[in-house]
Length: 142
Length: 142
DNA sequence: ATTAAAAGGAGAATGATTATTTATTAATAT
DNA sequence: ATATTAATAAATAATCATTCTCCTTTTAAT
Image (cartoon, rainbow over all chains, first blue to last red; front, side, top):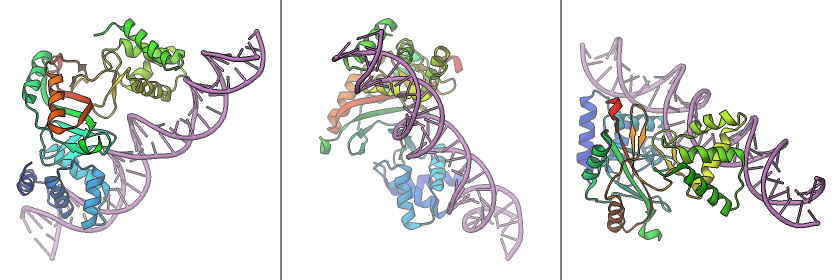
């Protein structure tokens, strides 16, 4: 996993370079996402931000996450009913979700690049993104 | 792609074996899904069924599709806002979605089984399902 | 400090999906 | 065939994640 502090700086730099403003609420969301390894939902982030800024609105979280998605500083993963977010590795990579406890893991899989290349080759599509999601039961839940 | 007629028979057999009834509306949905290669949405199926049974309700389509999912005779693919369904190959397999026209293709990719095995091995999860989705621009839209 | 633009807050609106209720319909036994 | 019952369909209400609207506050540049 990337260093949270470095990730945060990177996010801040990208924000600044695009002339987006830095507000306390926004900084709080960035910090959470940069440090997170648990792929939090909007609700998860909301709960955490509220501890520091109790008047924060859910819409603010949605808007911030959406902004970060646009500038490719966070990855949205639609596993189930609500999305989960990865601000630590904001580029496409495989995920494994435990169907029982909801835990998400990033497996280190070889051959992903080849798979993407093969998909492009056999279809003729220009591939710009992908989601490789596995569903199962984690060791603790078995 | 599988023979639509054969797929339909298979679906009918499974329904019967589980003591689910065969109604005209249900049959219509089965036929559409067995023959479809375009991965229709619930709305798509609804429009088609309505041409034969104009009073059909959206809820009926949802219920039928949901039933088919339970007995593993249709695969749900959550691409974007609304799900799309594959009744022709109702088992996990890769998909490529065109971000411009929405067309969905089934690429023939080697090494998928190994990838699943590798994910299970390195994580310790018991993997029961997966979604391998690629996003890009199809040849026609380029 | 002033000001224009951006962002936040609160809650309403949206839209896909699910649940509920009632009315039909099909399967089975009589 | 008919009655009984249980499953299914229709219509509509409810839900829930997400987005939007409107208004206020804050930011950052002058």
